Image (cartoon, rainbow over the protein chains, first blue to last red):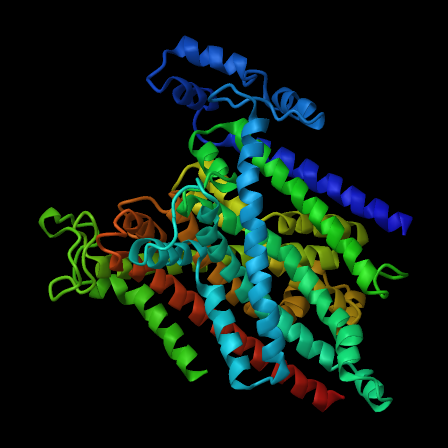
Length: 312
Length: 269
């Protein structure tokens, strides 16, 4: 147990270090002079060579790869994300503001996704092959093929342009979150329905279930105590993956709905070549996924007694 | 099943022959006819620069489908090599390779692709690199999993004892057994690549204008949603139908493989 915990921790450190170096190398090796890009973004005109050199020295870009890397990673380890190379303001407050828009969107999207998929999958698995089951599978296949940005545009077209029920662009009022969250949630629902349905069907095939039934255990108790935990394993795996999907979806959805969250933050930072901001988002995302994978790993061990013992 | 085959064949035909049957030049600007509704002259209407949308869709198929094919093939090659290296390279190599694979898997692929393509600047080259680098992990996991189970098979042990080189064993004994499962993974990744290409195009980090590509067509259409909503429907519909057809083909392939495995295990067992 201690050994495997150490392994998990080592993995987390390897992932984070690798991501940091890879991101920095990518920005470093990217085309064009980063100092020129920063100077252009800052002054918005053609800048003379001395100014570019001054910017280069200020941003610590003249020292070579590893010194520049340590310049960035050192403060980062103590929680300092540095300053925007465009505005010169600290990255952290802007990042927090962006997160405060993305988290409600992601949570609401996940809630909508679970709210649709869990009942639909349970109903569908009740009669495999029936019309409801075929309907659920068809919806799930269709949902997996519809890109989030197109679904978002269709929802805008229907609810904001044609019916004028809901606002679409920006994030001024709480109701601005409804359409983006619906876009995310429908995507989540499509993939979750499929997984939960096949999870339930597989759990039902377990060899010990007929034995319980013959002993007269109530169907409800079998469902709760024996089928649900079995079906939960693939669902937890998928929710882990689903969070990656939420992050991807949030990037696209925020751009479509002009919502000032992490996705817009990232895309704007890339377009402005504001490296400290790009790095901050990437590191934060990597950290988030390391922690989530850790939690999922622990959850597995709690649910499935076979995992975490010898040989696993 | 038959309808899936027909649909996939239609899309392959469109990607290969689409530009030949396109009624107009996809980049020909025709301002007087801009934002025309669908009609006799322009079957699906025109965009903001008066370019024929049908012709742009047909030409775009080559970019969306062709590039997705290339990208999923690159992922297949990298992933298979990585997976086999893990399966055949011993315990330490396995641990290192699989941790690297896990790190790539842990990160949302599209976000990584957006960062890579965005930093490298738009264009086909960086698009291929961004989606190729982020699209090999699933192949690697499958190749390693099957590879490890093959290691104890009689014919593999025999080949090792006979002094066959590791590379030859990988080529002649591992690869044929991997291909069916990898093909199923490949259909899924092919569909993902189509979605990825159009997503990057939609963000402006993919195929650059004036080249017609489904994602960039959506980006163009988005601004004119109020006046000509239909312009936005076509490219999205093309993406959805393509991805749906490929996914269904993948499902059919997986079912066929499962049936064949059931049969062969029934015969030997």
